[in-house]
Amino acid sequence: MQKPIMLRTIAGLALGALLAGSAQFFYSTYAPATALAQQSEELSPTDPELLIGAERLSEAFRSAAKKLRGSVVTITSSVEIAAREGRGEGLNIAPGMAPEALLEELLKQQRGGQGAEPLQRDDRPGRKVQTGIGSGVIVSADGYVLTNNHVVSNADELNVELSNGRAYKAKLIGADDKSDVAVLKIDAEGLMPAVLGDSSRVEVGDWVIAVGSPFGLSQTVTAGIISATNRQTGILRGASGYEDFLQTDAAINPGNSGGPLVNLRGEVIGINTAINSRTGTSAGVGFAIPANMAARIMEDLRTEGRVVRGFIGAQLDDVTAENASKLNLPEGVMRGVVIQVVLPDGPAAKGKLEAGDVVTAINGRPVINLLQMRNQVALTRPGSTLEMKLYRGGKLMSLNVEVGEQTPEELGRLAGEVPIESLGMIAATMNPQWAARANVDESTKGAIIIGIQEGRAAALGLRPGDIITEVNGEPILSAPELAEQLPSEGNLSLTIRRGNREGTISTFVE
Image (cartoon, rainbow, N blue to C red; front, top):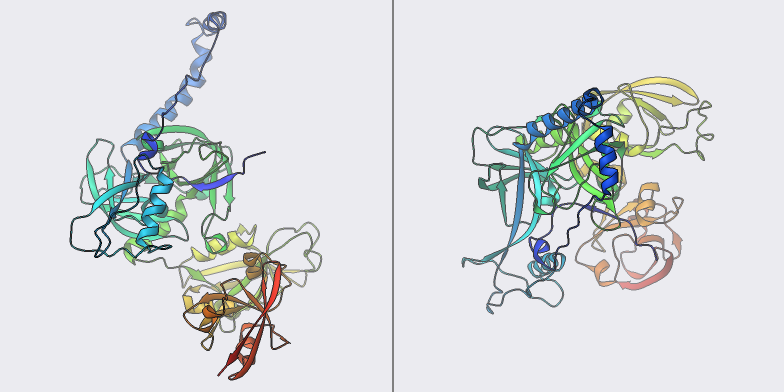
């Protein structure tokens, strides 16, 4: 039976991973003596011109590695083990416990998981257990370090080790789980910052090197090429994450997370983040956050303490072979993004965008799919103008849209989110995006539950992702309609769809 492919982030697991069990190493080359002799004759010193091209390429790799190695750091994260209040008990940690189990136990106990009393922090010194190893890259001489959010999340203490062996405690300046970018600061001066390159110029086939600490082996350099650009994997918070990965076949392994992907000029063009593998180790399919995206988010985290994202107030969908003919697109136009819903008084509405418009380019850059367009809008500064090329009724036209700021309130308005206070929950109107998240047909109508608070909904066993299709036998087409049809008293019957199942929940409202 074939093992499933795992798409996973690549921060190193606990240091115990290097010690638990017996490590096995094998020599990677075998050649008979006759083959070695033949090779020696073919590459004899009398034919140095045969090696000139290879030596020049080798020199380029050597130069890029030297330029970056002083800027790459190893990041270790630790979690404090605090005693349970009133009992003085520690965690259920056994010698040689696998790192995954160790981290799960730490997090479960700290969150007060199943059958466990919540851990209470106190002033007594707590023991710290190292739970992760990752990488980072120095971006300023005064100690700012760029890395992944998943390298530093849930840590009580972070330590940064430089290439010369000096180690510092690090302060978390900010982190963004939607893009998996984080920024640290160490108290050091005169450091060697890396140069961030222009990732928009990266092309498939470009040579790159990855530098980091795979399996805790600091300052490891591997090489490969760019295999693809504009990759979306769904690993970052599913549909709510912002992904535009560079794909590479350079060897990336656990511990490489947060380290740089570098071109032959020695410029950082990506931050290594995840791998696609059946084994959890490199299979030649690695992913890196483009440097332009990482730099933009890092700037916000340093200056604002949060990420400021652009917003146009429109729901989007991809152009497909199925809907292209319905959209009256010219023959050969098979890529773009359909404007499905325009938020009243939002930036798109003010820019004269309409439902049914098909956007094919923004600021001269072709629009491939809705995730790419969503990323481009989100990375645009509020107040900036986007020039959109689009088809409306089969005719090509151009419109300018001034970008607004993405806020929870605006996102809620766009999603049609409605607080249902009488039930203690938040619902949204079903659309193709919500349908994809709920894994149901995009034509499904109703109101999807997107948040549960304390109250009647929780008591009734309702969950986020449940779709309410009827109230007391009457069909529901939207979240506002759900709010209007809920009775203030008397019998309440809700028809619920959960995945492929449908059922009814009944109660009495007083």
